[in-house]
Image (cartoon, rainbow, N blue to C red; front, side, top):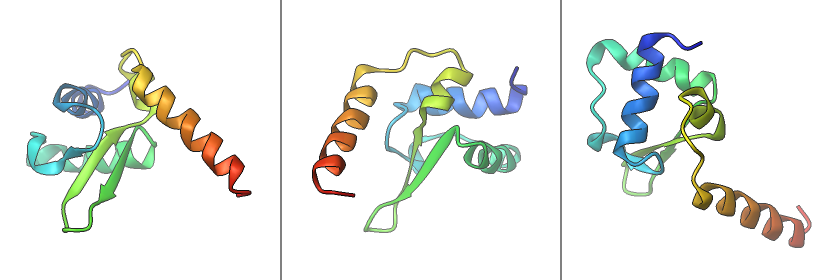
Length: 91
C-alpha cells in the first residue's frame, strides 16, 4: 500500500508519458518534492540528466507495479535488448 503523496507522484509521471519525461512537463507541486526523492530512493522512478542540462524522469518496473499499471511492451523490449547487447559485448 502506497502513501497518497507517493501514488500521486507516480501517477503524475505515468500520465505525462512514464518514460524519459522532461522535468518541466511534470506538475509536481513544491510540497511533493520530498516525495519525489523518496520515489527515487525506493527505485520507483529514475532520474536522467541529458547533455543540454535537462532532467528526465522515467517509471521503473517497480513504479508501474506500485500503481497497478500495466508495464508497456516497449519497456520490456528495451530491457531485453539491452541485456542481449550487453551479453554480446562481454560485460
